[in-house]
Image (cartoon, rainbow, N blue to C red; front, side):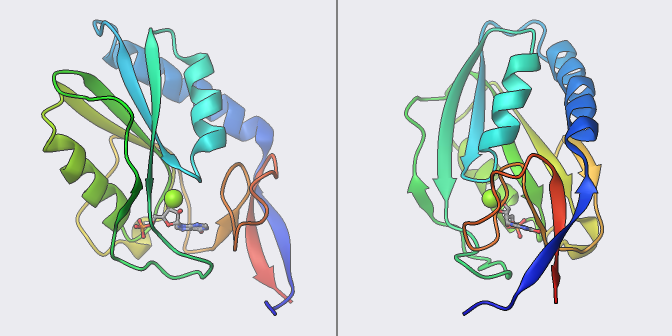
Length: 177
Ligand code: IMP
Ligand code: MG
């Protein structure tokens, strides 16, 4: 049995929506000359973020998904990244935006970036809704970041704790009671 916990709101749905409008403007500007941007969501945590983000982008986009292994049901990074589900489409010569929920130790996005670069995209950019810079173990920074947050375990807006709480409309921190 897991320990009981409560969730304290950290970032409201309204604040997230406003930030996504800014991020979309940045990205639409940056890729304004792109014929069709390939937006790659990392499953499963990014599914809500990518849905809101692509609807704000004023660009032709294609959406694809990649699933890599991460935490299992715990709170610690496994540090070992394996592909569980690969992209459906090729990205050679394409402009690609990788969408992640959180950059924590940095292992996941650093690995995914290396992997996708090896497929020779024309351009590869990354965006993460949340960043916990104090937890970094590898030198990696996403090109676009929604919010920097302290070292707290968070849930909601697609992000889970042991597969729960992804459906919360806000970001909250887990507090054990
Ligand atoms: P990293 O490889 O340590 O950067 O971990 C990134 C992945 O760990 C993210 O894609 C999340 O799935 C997961 N993760 C990191 N921090 C949290 C958190 O606070 N709550 C839930 N999942 C997290
Ligand atoms: Mg994840």
